[in-house]
Length: 360
Image (tube, rainbow, N blue to C red; front, top):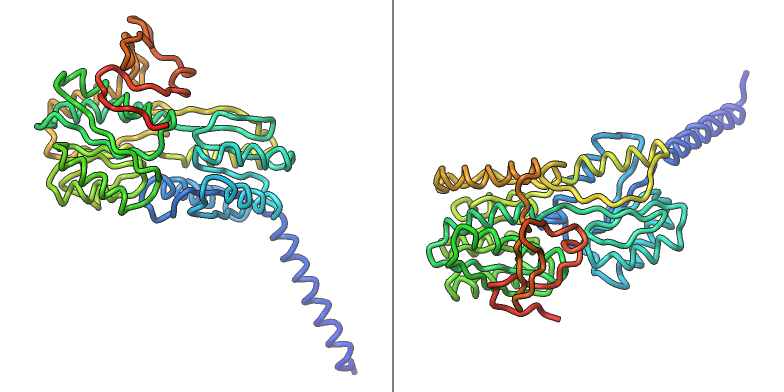
């Protein structure tokens, strides 16, 4: 007869074996981390990056484990969060806001075996890549629509921070609107935040009070769109399709689609082919898309917008085609030329016709 002691030892050995196997299986999962500047419930920028994270989960299943940290301030807090992810075994870390550039570079130098990807920045290293979307292509399309749809000839723009990406979007919108409506003016309110529904709504309300009948935004909550709906003016959604928050107000939305890029880069990590690079995708790559147009937009305006979109896609249209002058009358892009990526990536001036100053 087998003693109870022998049976107990056998059972314990079996449990330990199963536990060890489970632990080994968990260790085999490659960890991929994300850092977001806003909450994933912003229904804009951070929401869309999180959709991309979920796409990775769906694509690779048990091979990976993704984690995220939301609402991380740009600065010292970002360094601490990124460092914690690197120390806790993450092999690939995506940091998804311009203000994370220097913090990401700093941490990347300390963890050379970890791969890092920074969205919208320009500083790279052997283990740090950069990526962004050509949002200005979408701004060109909505600028054309706004130029045709405005009755007051005033476009209101809720802006976050005076970085090249945001300035570039303002210029692209204005140039396009002016090309179809020379009377258009643009009013800009800087809110110094990416996500603050209260500030964003107040800015939209103030712009409407100043005569704007179309509200643009480069902030991440649907608050400006909601204010536009309340005030019965038009608006354009940001980063995702925000139509649910203002079905009557939204003309369209400039949507970011990170899914394919995140899947591609995770695949490269798993296969050992990941290399530092710079990617800047637009309509052609699928990183930038337009939400369905409001049915109130006339058919000829929709046709104009689609023609411009197709032109950008095939290279016959460029949102920054010369001649382009700045506010002081200096030629920045000569006739017959297009702004190159260097100028676009570092844009720090308003184009001629914008009556405003860029905050310092």
